[in-house]
Image 1 (cartoon, helix red, strand yellow):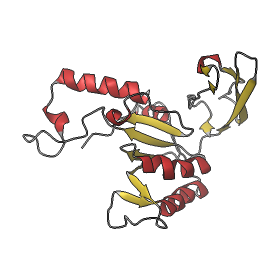
Image 2 (cartoon, rainbow, N blue to C red):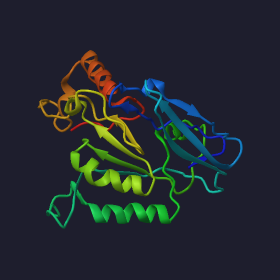
Image 3 (cartoon, helix red, strand yellow):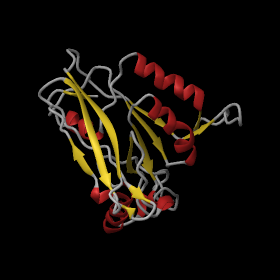
Length: 234
């Protein structure tokens, strides 16, 4: 869901073939979104392999009028790890979220018409370029833990909302894989660790040079594929 005169950024796509391998560069995008006119628009992603076999997927974009009441601030929900109470118990650790409770929270937000902006919308809102609905919220999870992808991402996709994985790039090494409804942003490449005793809490990032910090963040961007937000490490 997007707003009239909003900014639409493609959520990403990939295409692979069992013979040709990666054929993402052959994907053709058909139809456009008219952000001046409210309505429901269908974006079609179509691709052919070397044998002329065709595949396609659809993405629905809904353009709606902006609400009368605008947000004065935007809450950001931060999660870390997830567990299923039917399989394990991490209830004593505040970094863990029970997945059924998480789904109940997401369902509440959807049922009560909360809006889930993209990071570009958050940036434009912070810069005073656009307004956002009074009930806007951002869902994030630090560290790119496997439990986020195994348990939380299916919930995010079920309710068709956006969520952000703040990635420790070192854990991935290569580019983060595409997943519908998920944004990847930086939790630095390899600064999520201690090693800066002079500065107390805040980790190694406090005790490196400017050039080392820039180099780390550039590597992080290569993994995330984006640089719109950062979760400060450690």
